[in-house]
Length: 344
Image (cartoon, rainbow, N blue to C red; front, side, top):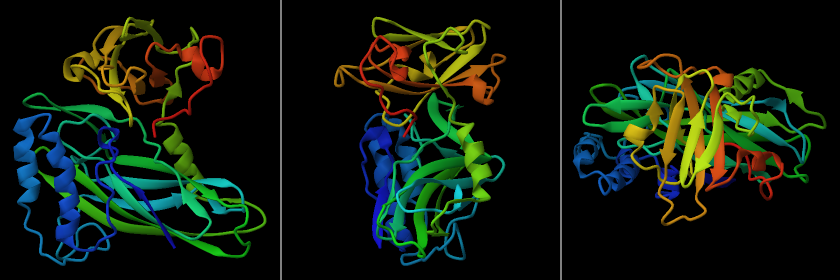
């Protein structure tokens, strides 16, 4: 049985490879370490870290699902689904972690956040199975008093994971795929760490069989956004003015930028990351990463002060290197080979 870790991609540093532990105190240590890094950027966030560090958790408490008699309150649930009810050797299937959150609570995207950490996972896999990097859905901006900017999910978030099956995996076996998960949920008054174990059994056959989870996976894909192609038909047109990425839409709608995993550091994201007009100018810190990657989503906003429009055609997926034209992503003239698509 192999273990594969998908740690929080905090600033793309992989700061903590999480351990498959059962101690409540040990699990909280991981959140303390991740959150403490943020105080190096914004010292006033010490209060957030202090809150979590002060949580009274009995040492040795065992939580198989979020909360429990000795665990923190449950404000979210998670389960694992598969696109295929049966798989074949040599193929790649898609799995989905489905997080359902209580009303008024939110979890955090793998983004440039001021006060929250993204989900982390430790996978247990049979020999011959390999889990890929998470594929995150578009999040939205969440601003708190004091200029605290996070990028969050509410109600439901579905995070996809490619599952590769080796060609020499024996037909007739049942593959048990399990994940040990940690994530943080918050409301307007408090934050609570959540922990869970979830698993699914997938048989290996000579032919694939679509499962009920395929509809869930299809729903998740609609939240990934449409890739910017450089076409005039794109809902958002992208161009560079020096090191500033300019986004425009002909409808004159407002726009918001949500950085994805691995995005180079945005400059003044609180003020410059959203516009109430049809033009958005985004600046990034390329000093340490001259060929830095801009990855994330630009979401259209119908009216000032409203939430983004979340239909697929209203979410533009951005994945560009410094100065790169969107046409390069499609192998059109203007660049070299296309990088892998999607925020991972």
